[in-house]
Image 1 (cartoon, rainbow, N blue to C red):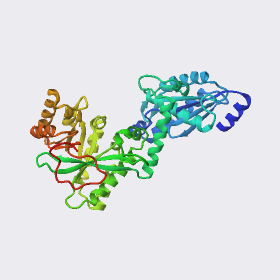
Image 2 (cartoon, rainbow, N blue to C red; image 1 turned 90 degrees about the vertical axis):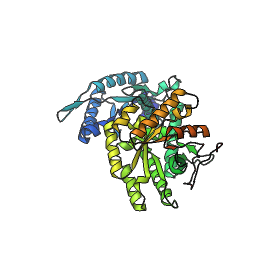
Image 3 (spheres, rainbow, N blue to C red; image 1 turned 135 degrees about the vertical axis):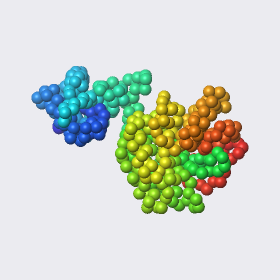
Image 4 (cartoon, rainbow, N blue to C red; image 1 turned 180 degrees about the vertical axis):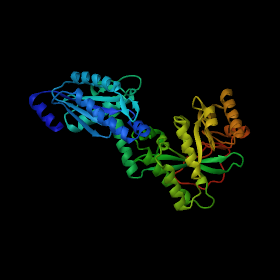
Amino acid sequence: MLEYEIGRSERHQHAFSLIMIDLDDFKEINDTYGHPAGDLALTELANVLQAQVRQGDLACRIGGDEFILLLPETPLEGAKALARKLCDRLRAHRYFYQGTSFHVTCSLGIVSYPQDGKSVHELLAHADLATYEAKRRGKDEICAYDDLKTRRTGGALTRDSLTEQRSEVEALREALAERRIVPFFQPIVDMASGQVVAFEVLARLIPSVGDPIPAGRFITVIEKYGLGRELDRQIIAAALAALRDFPGEKPTLFLNLSVQEIQNRNVLGFAARLCHHWGLDPGRIVFELLERHAVDDLEKMRQFIRQLRKRGFRFALDDFGSGYNSLHYLRELELDFVKIDGAFVRGMQTSRIDEALVRNLSNLCADLGMQTVAEFVENEEMFAMLQKMGITHAQGYYLGLPLPRLPVVESPPRTGSP
């Protein structure tokens, strides 16, 4: 129908528009009330759309929780007026299911032919970009692709930046398919003995040309576009294979997880099967999540940690101290390791406040039976300060760079930097 409408509008010199409708947080409806409630929401949304459009307009569900309205002979301003009406109508609509009721908002993206694209591919891709920008603005919003022509302040995305991001995610999909995102291993030192006893596993993208790219450069796009599950599994499998092949006594591995993994995606079962298959001790595996991600839903986090321990794994809370309720999390969550936010460690040598915070966090964790890891240790003086404070473990460029293989290292450097 879109191909037909492009040809008809070209012949008669008419404009037409598309409105893409994407439900906000639809997964929460399925998770909270069950999939039949989600099916009901999709059906009722379709009825609302059909009731709002004119005869001759076309309402389609194009997959999942995404719908599109094709509005023949409708210029951009007309589509914007209908989108505003739809947004208000959908916001007010109440869904009833088995004695309960709920609301669902939608994000809407608008494109118009021919100004926003002259092919099916361009129109749909640009409608998707506009819808994404509507979600980025806070959801329950409307964005026309035309609005992205002008660069804005406050971090708003533009046509160019959105297109670049789409190109980046496709490149990342290709890299995952080709197994070019691989684990690197950064040493973690036991402060009492000075020996390397563990490694943090860090993802690196191996480009066709140039140096490996650290995860910080691409992890936001990975998580935004739902690629975290595949990345986690590839890194876990490769890291555990390296542990399997490690000669002698096996070190402990700290493995980062994306926040999506606490949503019952069975990453723990996946790792447990690999450990069983390769004869690895799950106690050598420490899964870690960033504090700001791990505490969004404390009850779900507790369940995740219980399942983790049931399978023999251990848990670390990363970037501890970066949140507003860090002490509350120490009380509510049973932690094996607390990784102290590197910003505090970096500031110890020049800030009495940072030095006091690290010292007191070390004492508090020791009283609670939790081990500590100080990150970003960059020189010998910093290492010595942490030893005196009773920090149990440390990592940083002074103690060892991330390496592409799991190395056999007996002790860290004592002077200078690598």
